[in-house]
Image 1 (cartoon, rainbow, N blue to C red):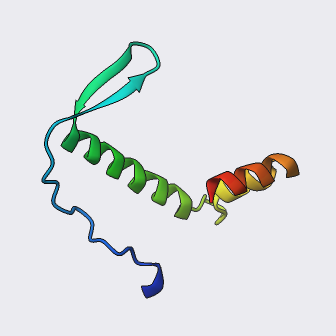
Image 2: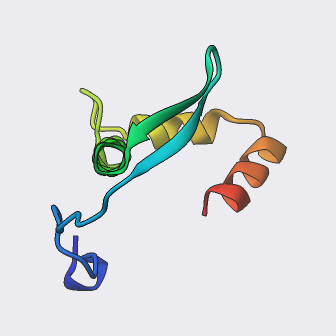
Length: 84
């Protein structure tokens, strides 16, 4: 990661929020979750996704990149446009 790639905000910023967020559970429908807890879940998900992007397999290849390369050209074009 270069200096240009560093995020503008420090990790673990203050979460001075209160209240609840309603999110959809595919099995039970809408569910309420504390806003701070929801932010923490989102931060953990982002951290995991960032880890997956940089992860290399035992043979030195990036598994996510190899998966994307294995997609059919049309699917790859659609995923690239929507993902970035």
